[in-house]
Image (cartoon, rainbow over all chains, first blue to last red):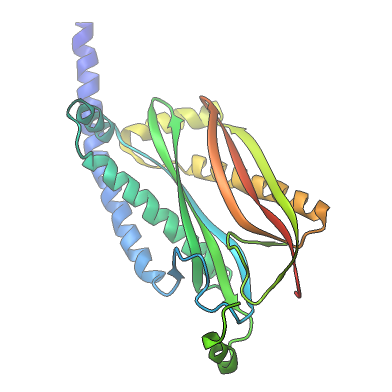
Length: 163
Length: 106
């Protein structure tokens, strides 16, 4: 009898996890797409050196972070996947959402401070044990650049020798 | 204090190097957050409390790193990196480190 109740709770959590998780994910993706269009003018690159090494530019660190939790259904499916191996699609979307969200927050941080260009963008991922399941943290950081003088002469100097 | 993860700042020259500077903090989460996170683990989504916790921790690590660089007389920290390690269940160390330098101008 007790086993039956336990199984019932498990099934209920699975169903709740599946529906709630799907809704949460859909909403998050919609929000990400919308904000990605809004922040399209803030450029973020992974390159180590600025495109213009000569013009003096104000440089400062910008970052974005997000901690995102899996849902019961995803965790269960991933557990099953452990038996057979292969792609864990449910976690792939989770990681993707977290990365895109962290990058968006980085861009938000950059624009808030008046920058339109971020270079040397790096990602860091950490798993955090929260309660009984694992959550992931994605931290994105980079250097925002603002040209100190936007004159044509300064831009002409770009073709010169590297700094 | 200029803080950046670049190796050089465009248009600025490094006058002198002071060596590595670092700042770290060890944080633990509290029970209330954990219970809430447990519920969130069922439905999924962002754990805002944890996001804030990590943000504050990184902020503090960076501030400590800056304090060390200031005490050396540096005006910039370049090549900044971050590292996160979980020491025990529920406690994590956040480390920020970089090279303290003196830049010309500005």
